[in-house]
Length: 254
Image 1: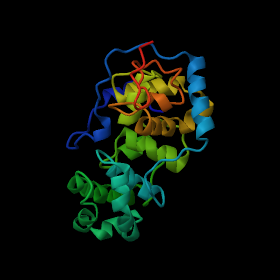
Image 2: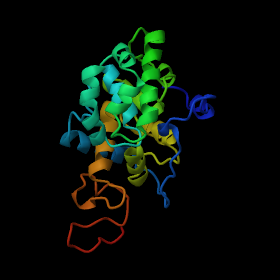
Image 3: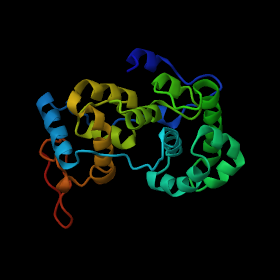
């Protein structure tokens, strides 16, 4: 993992817009102390028991199409990306085929996805970069991945984890919220949360940690109204007040 100081000190490169996944996100107010190590171990034990082999929800064919899908998912839903990518991947499942397809055709194929014009431009540019610098292969290096147009730290971590089986932690808005709510590794920025989780998540659970937390945030610990009443870790989580089952009054704060 790159040193925290080096990452924190390095801003967006000149002439390149910051990727959406590098921006700081305000942490929730009312921060409480993080869980104890034994509690964190129990959180992940329960997640692992309920879902031993969690997987990401983006559809892909190979490492390149995974990279493309993650780039397209910035400020978009996985479901929306999955609707657009089958037609794109049928025509362009390698960097060479993506470049041959051309920006205008790529734009037409992904126009249902938010920010599609800029994303089409980035897909062509990153494909060209992969051909010129990496022999058409997706690199197994965070630094090299972050050099690609449209790729930030979160995207690089997703690719390293899913394509190459590395125990990286990709912090999206769901994971950021969950980590601060429980709290596992409170932090004011995605990078702070990522580094905090790397320090506290037990090694045996680290490979799947970001999948469990993202899925938990997407389907249980939702932003506006978490489903505390059906949460696996409700008795450990310190978030209050707990949301009761539908039709019942709100549970008192503990």
